[in-house]
Image 1 (cartoon, rainbow, N blue to C red):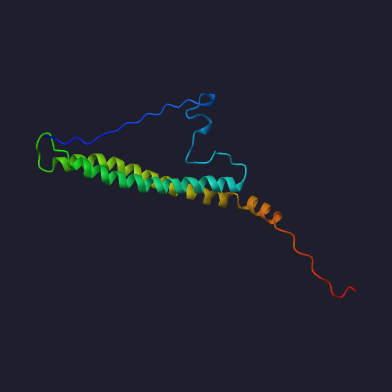
Image 2: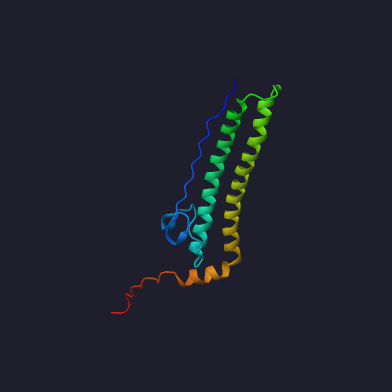
Length: 143
């Protein structure tokens, strides 16, 4: 007798507005890439960083679960530790995906830091202009 883990496959084929998959209601983990202000650059990079961190943690956990499930599948050749070795080979690829997602998160943060550094002059010029005007000072000598 052998153990076969259950596999569920779900395929969604939603064609919506303008033939785009999912149409107007399709959702993305990231905001639209409209970079018309420093705030939009910051928002995009920060959202990408947060998604990368979250996904890397989820994928790393999935790799551990996958390895433990696959290690329970008997080796077809009956080799000692054959099941564990096969499971490790598969899970290693999943861990690489988790590492890549973590690196994507790091690079997103680095991209925003680089943006701030490269465009510091422009950002400061606008930031200076955008300061609130000072409140008028009461001149008590003028009566």
